[in-house]
Image (cartoon, rainbow, N blue to C red; front, top):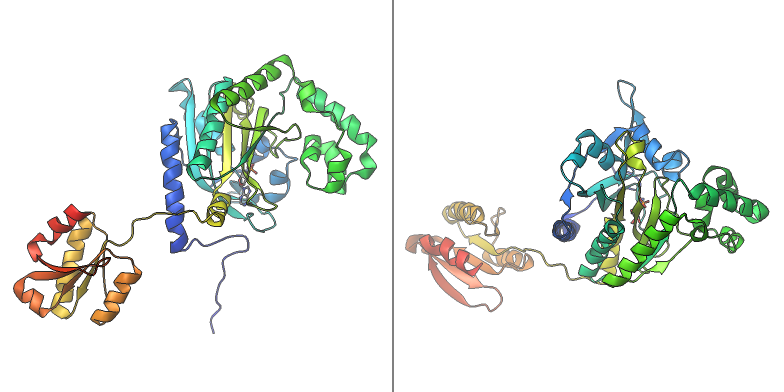
Length: 419
Ligand code: AMP
């Protein structure tokens, strides 16, 4: 017996029943992105490793543990992208996109790769949709991104909780980091080993540890909100006021720091209580220093990234009614000559936008009718030698069972008008 292969651990095939749903999801996301003035960007699946290391941060889980990196034949270290913001910013700088308008608004729908421990809602190849608004520091840009994410979830009837915080900037965050470090030293022995390590390397992340020991130990930790500089404070106040003004509800979560280093000021997450342990639908925030850090002119920006698998899980749980275009017409040919004709007619109808199916297995009329039923075809066209002689097809409406005749030359115009 030859070896049978399985998909690699943490990856998933999307089979036709699911791809139909995914296309529905993706189409809706694309439409809403366009309504908000965002255009699609597609970048290569791999980039130079240092692009991610420099932007996401050497000490983060993603860069430290999860990247799929490999040397190519020229010994350049490449990495399958673990997230998209770094690639979008690289492309923005490379192609001078900022020269075209005062704000560059981009979205993507694309696969990402992280070598994490696979579990429900956590894969090694997963898909994200996301958007980036580059060029303006206006708090309304943050609110536009948040409203766009909220609108996508609202359009699917998904309930969510929006958690929001400010993580400060290079002026005020170092002072907070110091204060937090000082506090954590006082509770050091009660922290988990992972967080003890983070006290030195990535101290803010101790705050969003899921470990109960850490949660308890940091209960009385200083809050970043008390350390914000005037600029960060007024930006945050404006974001909150504008969210109130557009009627988007949120929860202030001063422990929210996000796992990527490049965030400044606003940080936020959309949470669903339909997801179990992996409850984040997506997360985002402002990253005002990243473009300069990656070699561009200083340029403020804000973005959001969200898992499509997680969105699909929530939709499945709430039994969302996906609508899709099913087969419209099934043509049954009863002998060789009719089958030949059915094949030609099917091509003509398909070229004119009518979803048409035929049988290739020379099955009986009954079997073909069953197949048409399974495909939820609206009409069946039956052609045998009698029909070939009269150049007229028998047409059956599947819902009512009603039968009538349509002359061959009129088939296209008939179905075109009933589409
Ligand atoms: P992050 O870039 O880590 O903030 O991720 C943003 C969103 O992408 C998360 O909130 C999830 O919805 C999704 N996501 C991240 N990692 C995974 C993964 N390994 N598998 C599935 N979805 C993921």
